[in-house]
Image (cartoon, rainbow, N blue to C red; front, side, top):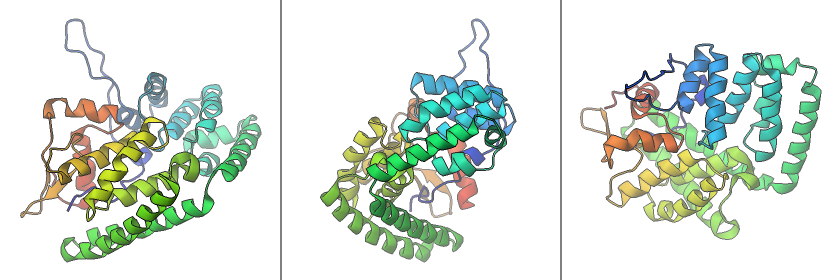
Length: 309
């Protein structure tokens, strides 16, 4: 069993402490700031630092996990720089990377303050225009089907974890088999459901179905190039491509590349499965928008209530 089957808590809810280090002359250079440093800055109410970190990452073209762009808007607004927050919205709205419902209603200090800004009604008009454009471009029935299947998958996964695993994993497997059979036929007919066609949430749901299809490794391997193409063109998350890459590699008897997959041993401890080039692992993870391995282990331990090493 691979303990990354449940969608982890939304990234912007993860709160911990952070320091941005400045390397002294002749000392080893500090590692570049990451998206997860920005999350920690936000949790420490260092909104200006969060904005600087995310802006630098965004400007450099670094991968953001789902919801990352909204956090950039939130940090800028929470820091009091409404002009910057509004400029980010203008730039990001056409990309489809901003979750429009969250932008409009999610309760957050920065977003709440931004909604009281005199410029907010014009933002709402642009949001409405984007939604109209999406309605024309998107396959609403396909998106709805994907979201329904993802919800069923997640309910089964959570129930199995709550039951302590073991035989309880039979139900999630049955759901995965049903979902994968459906998605295989859907992709054969319509192609990969990317973000432009089914929205960010629909594209994520499609990836979840593939990620959980361990019963059919040939299907996972066949979908990997499609997800890679989507991720590299901004139509899916690079992190999703990375996690599926690891599953496919392990199924082929090869070491994983991004250190995302763990296996429960006889003592009930989750252990990292064989991983290539551990010395540069965190660098590869950072390039794909993944947090450092140590932080990922901590998240898994909390999510599954088990020791992770």
